[in-house]
Image (cartoon, rainbow, N blue to C red):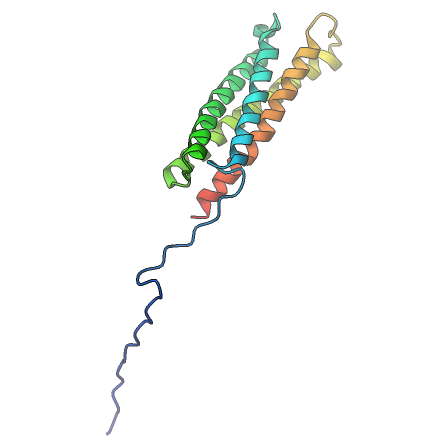
Length: 177
């Protein structure tokens, strides 16, 4: 029986024009990611609204009597410290024209943003519940600082609203690698 034997003939890869392996195409830095002007803007907004929530709540004399308000002060303090430190890192990256798209850095930013934004949101929700209880159910706003409580709660929600895009962009950047 006459059977032909298959043989494999390798085909050479055509050489590239740049003489080596082409670099991996990276995703363009989207505004709002670390090291971009949009990211710095988000960090500064987070800082401003977290500090505003912290200051407004801390200036009331009876906030320590309610646990949710103490939680808001703690969460706003943590958010303001986190946003300040990352704003400084963003300013440094913009001044030296350096990209912050390292896996470890993006992981740290994503985890930190996730934790701080979750704490800020939880504290704002708890404070909003207590504020509604004092205002609508107990109707004792005349004896309390309802306007300050509502203002601090609103500032915490706005701080969370500006922290959320930072978290989502960092998480998306991390997941797309």
